[in-house]
Length: 457
Image 1 (spheres, rainbow, N blue to C red):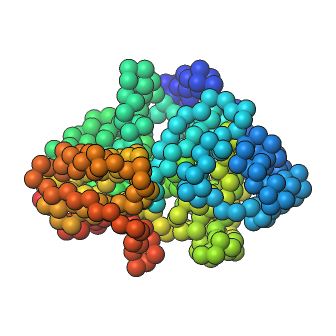
Image 2: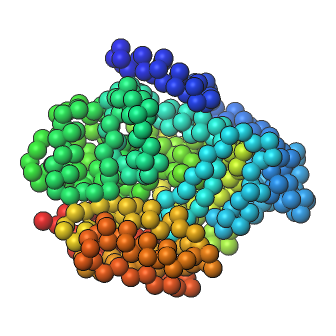
Image 3: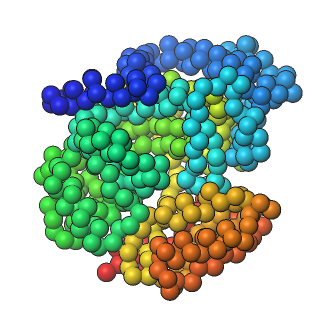
């Protein structure tokens, strides 16, 4: 670790977190001890924490106070993680129907967030400082598994408005001090890809972070241009927010000359699992309990695929208990040989994000269109289908609160991104169809060469 990285990791970032009222520094230190606990000790800790978490929200959160009373659930009697099966699964619809009742009566400052719509159903929820501290600490711990730390040069390819819309002077200054540079993942035009490649070569980051589809597009562009990228000293490429395909992993690793560290999580469910250098996705078990359930909502055993259900025990201000992610995964019965005793999420099968292509050939991340639709009042679920370069359709399940002016906004915003000559149609439907595989794709581009991540010339 270089001197500047030490100053950032041990002085500047801790001061930053203290200023924000976060406890992430102390929590990260705790996590770096508990990750090596014998499994029996870790399991006992998790049960104790679950019991305290459920007892607290049963007293302070109206939704759970009423639920526990109605089903005669006594959190004081929780003696194993299996006790969660007594509680119903939580859906986005449940939260949307009773958002205020999910707020603890004694909650601290809450920040409002929106999901990215990975299930096609936008969700507004809230996050307290405790949840933020735990999420930062878990991500920080996982970063250090790979021999990099806060303050090492980082290049981030991302597209969330939370990240891109908050580039005020203070945030820009913080990123500059922490040596973190942000590139927008939405627009992957040839000119921008040229610029991204040159930025990476010029900054020589120790780590990359971004969507696997975005990093693989940049990697393929560099490969096609015969630009050498594997001698820059990049130690690791962190990818998240989409399913990582084998061909993407191989391409990123080959072009950038570094291992690829997958991560699984969501803005609503939290940072659920991170890859270690041995390749296993370790669950942030001190904070998060992962169950997998079948179509009837019954828990399935390890090594059997099921829907991933998450209980985040740092969400006391706005609880997520047995929250349905909509993703399909497999919990592994086999521990990892890396020395960490954290349980392993063996496979995540159900997350993907397509790119779309503008009329002029510019490739952009599908989320560039999603953000227009997801926040509109009355939108219950949606799917965006790009039939060809000249026609993009939005399938929309909408409530009475949806206004005709919102439809006009969708059309105008899409034309602004895709091109003024593109036909954008909005079709109201009663239900969004799923793929034959049972998976949901909230953006689907039928333009040749886009859905497989290749670039059209």
